[in-house]
Amino acid sequence: MLDLMRNSLLHSFRPFLLASVVSFGLVGLAGSASAQTSVLTPTVSTGFLVGPIGGINLVAYNTDAFPILNSEPTCFLAQNGSDIAPWGGFTVEYPLGNPELLQNFIVGEVLYDSKSSKFSAQNGSNASIPTKENGFTATGSVNTALTADLNYLLINLAYKYNFTPGPSPVGPGLQVGPSVGVLLKSQFNKTVTVTAISPTATANDQTVSATVSAPSPVDGAQKIRLALRAMVIYDIPFTQEWIATPTVGYDFPITKVDNTIYNWRASSVFAGIAFRYFIKG
Image (cartoon, rainbow, N blue to C red):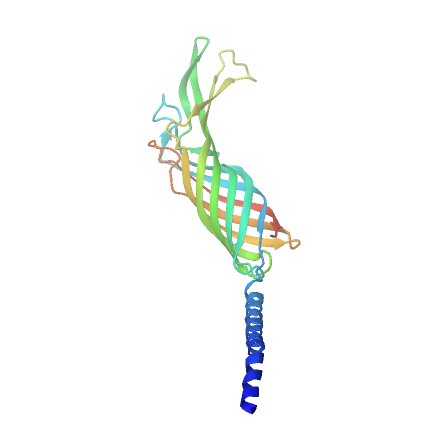
């Protein structure tokens, strides 16, 4: 009789026992999943930085000697040169890695870049040129000068590394990357000044001068310019959002300015500053 009653009770409570075991199992799985979710999900979006950038180029030309005046291929020659020219545009900086310890960045830039400069005259003047004015012939002098207007639209992509980590860019760092330039303008500017004894010379007015300037296109100018840009930077955060970045760098040309016999390359040491706003996602 007791066995019969025990079997009856077990048969009656078996569904409840099974339901209890299943419930505890589901609760355990849910707790485990919740714990895993709480560990894996928190990620912070770092956002990106945008702003203007600009500065100056110390342009350097490296060329073979070539005639300033095609009509005088041996008298007036130019070779190499240097000058100061502006650059500026817009920059975007994307942080990589831990958002609380930022050190690695990808930087994109779209810039107007002037490589305009003066050429150095090797023998740009001649003081013993026969000149003639109003039928009067006398010994005179000829002075020549040559400059170039050379402007590009640059598209730069670079890797930037900051030595000091932080929640926003801070401290010194290095930046290096390729540069692709699209030619906007290429033009020679030739100036010739002729000075001679005046046929109506007086004690106070012995000479007469005439200056002629003429622009001409750069024959064979390359439409695309390739270069490498390397720079030293220093990020100065005024707030968590606004960062100023002074830069000093070197633009090393891979391609020549033109495909003529000039063997002309245009490089530059540049300095500038960027102001970026940190848009946090």
